[in-house]
Amino acid sequence: MSLMPSSVKTYLESISIERFKPAFVKADPTGHIVLVGGDWFNLGVQDPLPETILERVPLLVGLLPLQGASFLIPDVQMKNGRIADAHFFHEPTGDWVVFVDVTPHHVEKQQLFQLANELQLIKQNLGNLKINAHGRIGKALQQELQRRYQDGRVAYIAALEVTFEIDATVKDAETIRMAIVSIEQISQKIELLLGEALAWPIYPCPSGFQAIFGLIPTEKKLEDVVQTLTEQILALMNDVATYFDAKEGLRPVIHLRGGTSSGDAVVANITAQAQNRVTVLSKAMNRAHELTSKARPGQILSKFLVH
Image (cartoon, rainbow, N blue to C red):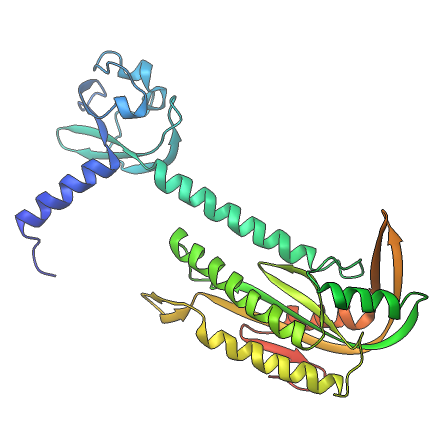
C-alpha cells in the first residue's frame, strides 16, 4: 500500500477531530497525570486540569499506569449523557487515554437494535394465526363475506404466507431504512394483486402477510390462483433495491420466504364489540406458516410444488 500523502493525512485528521471531538489525558510512567487537552467540554467535563481530571472522570481511577497494555473501553456514558469510546495506549514516555465522542454512532446502533426487535416481534405475531382477521379489505368484499358466512359453514380454502427480511449483511442505518421502504413498496403492490385474486389478507404489516383464497369461489382452481399470484410476487422481487457489499458484491436489500397450503376451514361471521368479524379456523393456515419457516430466502414452498 502506498504511503498516505501528508496533505491527505492532514485533511483526514481535521475531519476526524471535527467529527469525534477527542479529549485526552497523558500520564507519566508512574501514573501521574501530566497533560490534559481536547474537547472535554463536549463530554460535560468542566475546567479539566491534571490535578482534577481523576475526580471529574472517575473511569480513569486505578487504570494508570497501563504497565505496557493497550485496550479500549467502548460506550462510556459521560455525565452529560454523551457516549464515548475510551482508548488506552502506552508509549515509552507514558500512557495516553483518548476519549472519542461516538454518540451519533451509538444512537444509530440503538436504532438498528430497535428495528431488529420490532421486526422480530412482527414475525412472532404472525404465528398467532387462529384469530379474527383485521387486514385491509375492500368494503364490498367484507360485506359479501359477512352475508355468505352469516350462519357459519365449512369452506375449502388455500392459504399463502409471505414474510420479508432484511439481508443479513445489511448493517448501516441508511440501508436498513432503504430496505424498510422496499418492503412497504412491494407490500402495496402485493395488496393490489391480492384484491384482484379476491384474497383476504390477514395482518398486513411491514414484514409480511398471510392471505386466504377461496372464501369467495371463482371459476379458477384455487391451486392455479395461488400459483399465479406466487409467480407475480416473485417477479416483483426483481425490482427490489440493491446495495453493494464488500464481500458479497451486489445484493438485494430484502429477501422473502413463503409457503402455501390448502384444506377445509370453518368460517363464521362473529359479532364482537359491536362489529362483525369473519373468523377463519383452518390447519391450512398453520401449515402455510410452517412451510414459510422452512423456506430458504427467495423461496415459496408448497405442497403442490416448489417455486
